[in-house]
Image (cartoon, rainbow, N blue to C red):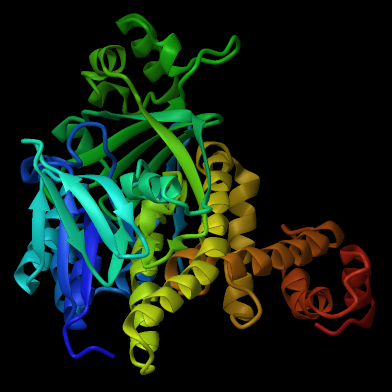
Length: 477
């Protein structure tokens, strides 16, 4: 392998691009980062229509402890969901079973500021106002043009796309021979940030994510360290004959009536909602699915490879995990003694093999969670099921862990979680069909391990209910 320092060219100076710069510099890469926006625009990102980012163990485990501590200083620890029902009652749903099971709600601009500062301090060269207009993956080369029309070429041993959902590098690679299957679509929902008064924010518990689920839409409030709360309305955009949508809320009276009816406990603390909803277009949400993530010596990471909806709060966590896996694979192949460029290509290929399925899995989980946030968490049956699941985990932690805990608080691959949770759900559904969860929860919990093992075994043709009945008949609880 060449004695010269390996070089990385990163397209995109968002949080993921900056994190990758930091980690590659720790591995003695020479790193150049190119960003199409100006520095002022990048550092302002997050103002206006943006909700906070939520970091969990999956994302935090990637960060150096010193950097992690700095980010904690800018965020708010959330231990639970706090559900606000139409009748004014509250339901509290812990995110996990220990104090370590929490979210850190971080304003997007604060995360950006910290990671950009760390990348620069670590030695990254960051070029703002440079738009990617061409790429040659086999040479590790990208072309950029600045605001004056000046063209700049950058060449590295590896070319990494971290330039988001509308990735220019992904587009340039697809033009130059990459056989990437790229699918994108907009979902029905959009989102809009609202201004919550200081008095309204002060009335919200600061240790929880506040949610007002209303069947097909919901309001969300994320407490901040300064006592404010980032408040966001998620709602379908287009008109519907039977339901109000963003497009239906065309005047102040309609907005005020909607908020008074749907969110009576907080409507008075949103005095500018009518003006904000009528005058501001909601931000749209889209999904991008891409495969493979690599081509030649180029690799796509984060939203440039997999843009997901925000309803599981895993977008930034999945992207940080991407960065960690890529660096791990670069360590593996660059340390194997093979030609540097061959090692880069091998690392990119294995990265794609490992992360495409994971990206597709968390994308689907995130869409599924929209229904949980807007509808299910307001349902008493849902909360009864969650209480049963928590008891089941306490009794049989090796056999059962709630889906949310697996996603947020472990590094279990997302696609493995999907496979595991399907069997978990099948086993628990079968037992709840046999036993009454209200009066016979102990029987459900005692029978679960055997039913779960049966569903995991070779004979999956046997119906779940039959497996449950077999376990019950044996009386082995």
